[in-house]
Length: 435
Ligand SMILES: [Zn+2]
Image 1 (cartoon, helix red, strand yellow):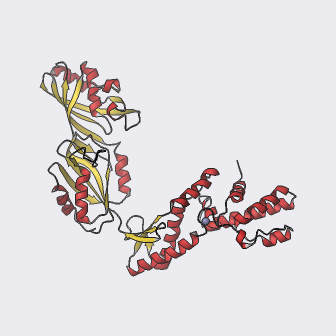
Image 2: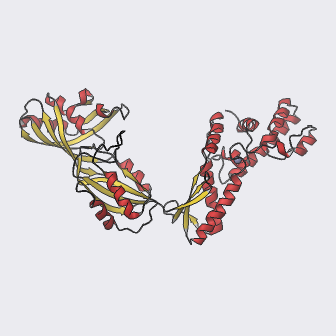
Image 3: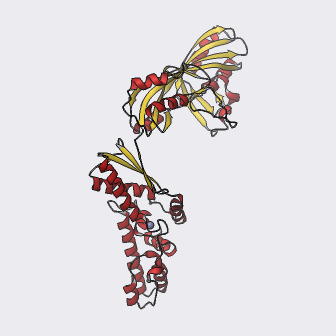
């Protein structure tokens, strides 16, 4: 294992760094320390270590000390005098500026925390959150050192700035940082040197019902600029966002059905995010009415306002859900009701092996999935047409369960019936979620 101090010496031989930027490279070592303290401690230890080696007659240490003199940004003059090193390195114009922040990080923290605190006091807010936009050049320079020295315990400058400014603003304004429900978010933009105030997103949990086919979740614009599908869930949310005065929206949905699949029954769960809204006190009923007035083919049921943690729970829940589908299935050869009864028995509780369907192979990685069918009920409609109600685990590709997808899904209805089966209509009837 390489010594931490050897790494620090190597970094300082190549890059001039201020205390904070050096300390931040090791931010996750030690607790309750400020990165500036970490950096200063590392520099002091570096000087002491090199001094010791020099006293022990290590010639190389002497050269090392000389070569880091203009990068370490610490007073070395009296040590150099004591060691009788004839060096002009200490002359102030030889001291280089910090490679990452150009010696401005402390000013950024001090200046912006005062400015934000002033705004908070004036607006009489009780809680806030800090956001920060850092110029790319700074992030790139930080990344160069991390990559070159394969550092593992570093913290990003963005994170440090957010935390340090947040701490100072709390002290000055006597308010609190609130990650979940801040009254306002102050976005400090270091590219344009501005502070922008945003309201936190309004997050609302509910369900959507797709009563028609050819409806996508997100608006899908083709390369020639025209729409691929006439209607999208996103269209409705964008329409509603103008009532809330939101600057932008996001949809957080657990899973996705094909555009030609209807979603009936209780609908599919989703969280609608209205970003930077000017109106927050809209009632769920009011929102529901606005959403439902947009199209007869998409309906919404709004349940409650939620916090951001809820979104990850919703997304994780997608693979644990069970679903009930209704499919209309066309088969090449005729079948009878006895064979369908056998199909029901055969698939009950069966695990289906599915490689990624051919139709989405361009977009998704080719992997093998194992998903369970819980039960199937069938109803014969004619000699080569039947309806099936399929209860299965979330994430099972139902169209491929039916067709077999050229052997990529097994067992399948086609395989079991000994004749090609094809799903010609599919509806989600029920999504059972555990959020
Ligand atoms: Zn710096």
